[in-house]
Amino acid sequence: MKKKLDKLAELLFITSAIICVLALLLIMIFIFYKGAPSILETGVFKFLFGVEWQPRAEVFGILPMITASVLVTIGAILIGAPVGVLTATFIVYLAPKRIGNILKTATDVLASIPSVIYGFFGLMIIIPFIDRFLAGGAGGNSILAAIIILSIMILPTVISISESSMREVDISYRDASLALGATKISTIFKVMIPSAFSGIMAAVILGVGRALGEAMAVILVSGNAPFMPDSILAPVRTMSANIALEMGYASGAHQEALFGTGVVLFVFIFIINFIFYIVKHKGGVKN
Amino acid sequence: MKKKFSAICILISVSLLLVGCGSANTSDKTVSVVGSSSVAPLAEYESENFLRVDKAIEVDVQSVGSSSGIKAAIDGTANIGMSSRNLSEEEAKELKEVVIALDGIAVVVNPNNKVKNLTKDELLAIYQGKIRNWKDVGGDDAPIVVISREEGSGTRGAFEEITGLEIEKNDKKYTTVFSRAIITDGNGSVKQNIALKKNGIGYISVGSVDDSVKSVAVDGVLPTEETIKAGEYLISRPFLLLTKGDPTPEAQAFIDFILSDEGQKLVKEHNYITVN
Image 1 (cartoon, chains in turn purple, red):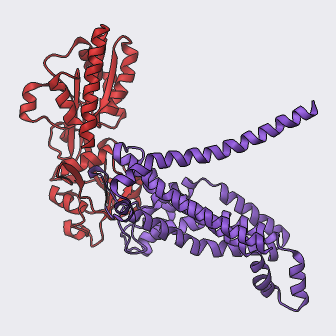
Image 2 (spheres, rainbow over the protein chains, first blue to last red):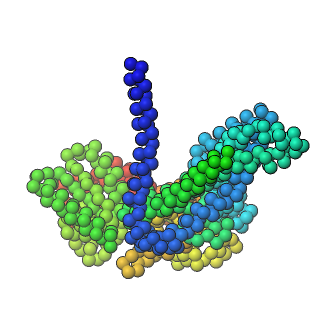
Image 3 (cartoon, one colour):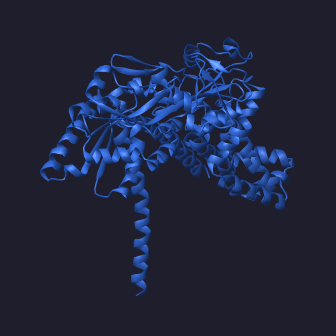
């Protein structure tokens, strides 16, 4: 009887794992099946490097969207990653336990806020601010607004993963360093952070994935103009925003082109996860 | 090309459907309503409510575009054609038309904006990015923030068609809207953006204008129910139902329902202007 129960439980676990993998496979097949023909029909080069997006005339070029996604993501990482990593460092090594706990709770809450709320906050607070003080009344829906919102949104990911990787570092490293006469700060920057480096990189790369994929908050603040940005205050449309914005009404070739955008986004995400895997794996070997 | 092909496909399938229904002797209980993609959501909504009034009549709504709808009505492949544009003289000779609703699009700016009137040409130039400062149209010296809707939106389609922002080249329709224009989804989102930006300009359904924004007159005419009903306001269009000769009793029953108080209440719910 006990053995049977054991077998049953095992079956349950295997089924769950299979469902998980199957879901991934199905999504992949579906997106490529729906999107790849459109890319091929337009021509891979024309689709990826075309700068005109005219759905009614069936002209589909997504270079402006790719550029926007890359710029916005880089910007969000440049701000979000250092802030996140330093916060994690503070929580792990410097903060008194109580303050550390408060910070951790705050991070968790930050992670659970729905993205539309971030977007709304951006629309009501950040955009008018940019409009008034930086853009001289020319709008405010811009790359900059999207970067600010996204850099806040990736914080929880960056903080929690770098924090756990820092906690994995053997505490005796720190004691040894301190015993050799190094100061607290130089111990953190020269010993502890380098030891947790692969984990911190993994945190940053997951942050990149989050920033690249976010649509809802970005739609509300980025302006969604499908053209090549010429300044940080220009309105832009990211790939994920393009899909979410137009899918509602799209049909025929237009809808297929949106799935095509999805394919390109998927390839980007895939590459990022691949890098994530390599970084983690490399770190594992070193330890 | 693809659109035409699918329109033909639908026409064929509609006619096959009718033939099929005929042999099953139920055609007298089915009303096919074919045409404009702007009218279709309203017609669909009306038909759902019509079902409660008369369960025996089945209304089948197909969205294929105004021109295909007019053609279907002339050919007799559809009991009722739907159009969101006025008929040409030739088309009008062949068909009977009933106006079921009016759609007006208001051009709106921030309540603090001084500009009260824009000509059609000024509006076109603003949306094409040729005029980029309010002082060129009688306002303050400030940049114009152009706000438009997402591709596929019916309001955007109508706005571009009526103002001439949409151009046709080699049988394909291109938009000439300034590519730097901010794109938002939904009337509500346009209003919110305009209310927050003192230099913004956008367009929304007349039915959803409120105090957060200010309508500007186009060619001297403000968008009100009266001016739209009188045909004086430029950016408006009728929603037409078309029949070849007298409609079948079932089609007539559906049209009567839309024109009834209950049917017109549904028109209002969709932010369109009623006809009686």
